Image 1 (tube, rainbow, N blue to C red):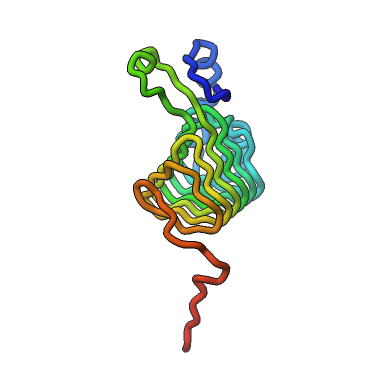
Image 2 (image 1 turned 90 degrees about the vertical axis):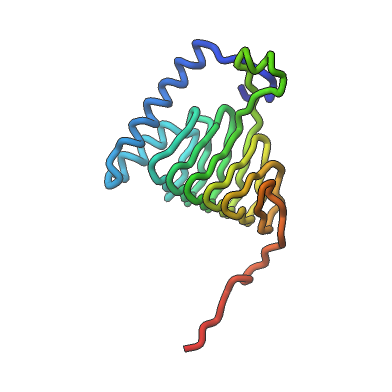
Length: 187
């Protein structure tokens, strides 16, 4: 699953995946006020779940165990993790509602698809990235540190650090500089 090569699901893989799907079900059906219980479930479900990170319910994941959350990450509702291989979300990332991070995909060859062939490419979201609502990040993409991805974007290629990018396909629109949004208000 982690080699980037085409593979086929086995009964063994499906049995292991069922364990993580049960944990995901438990997380999504835990009362929102039960913060400690939800955090414990996420620590069992995910590859890592950093300090002061938070995920709004519901969460959708193929596995969970292949996704690694850094510290102080916030994910709004309906985050979807197609984590058939590694998805890395570094410290201080913010994600709006309905964000999809796809590490799993299928071959173009129709014969292979008919046999349920799959391959996976890792996704990396570097430190301090903000991903707007409804964004889809495709397999093999890295989004660079401090960048902002506008709502509704389809991210098909790597995005460099310190940029504002948006669109379908997502394109860099401008560089982000420190203090660029600070507005002074006179009273």
